[in-house]
Amino acid sequence: MADPLALSARAGLPEDMRVLLTDVPRDRWDQSLPEMARFWLQMHQGFRQHHAHMAALTTAWRQGQLDVRGLHDRLIPALQQFLQHLDGHHRIESGQYFPAMARVEPRIATGIALLDRDHETIHQVLENLFKAGLALHQGLAGPDAGDRAARLGDVIERAQMPLARHLDDEEEIVIPLIALKGDQLA
Image (cartoon, rainbow, N blue to C red):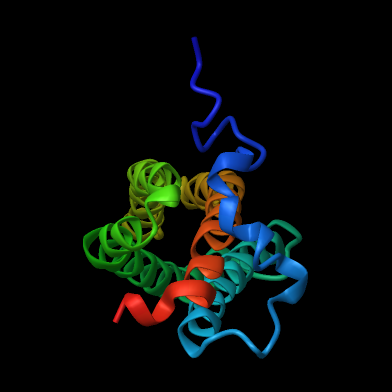
């Protein structure tokens, strides 16, 4: 039986994991949020934009606006930066913030555990991106460079859903917590 809370299966969080969202709903996430919460949202928006940039590059290549060399020269550095930033972000969350958050607010502990589990799934997504990017880089001069570029584009496209789902779900747990109890996390 498939896990309904698996990152690839869920369409959102169950209500019991969104308990703090009632006190700080998304429609109230404005400039009155604490600096830490605004920073968290900015980081997440940066990941969304970075992924969209990579997807746009592969779309431009598929539409003939870039040759394979042009795609490589623009996409590989962007991919490296994306992988490094997201991996670093997740390491800090899993190693420092998530344990502290679960201690500060036990009602969100199961949601935090789910987010931490998501990181394992996303690590595989990042590994797939790395391997596809490396394949393009290593085979750029070969006869199958176009196939390698297409595979990388496909991997970037498949990465969008789990990354977006995780970021959205994480925000629904973490942002209200920071708004309500962020001073206890320092």
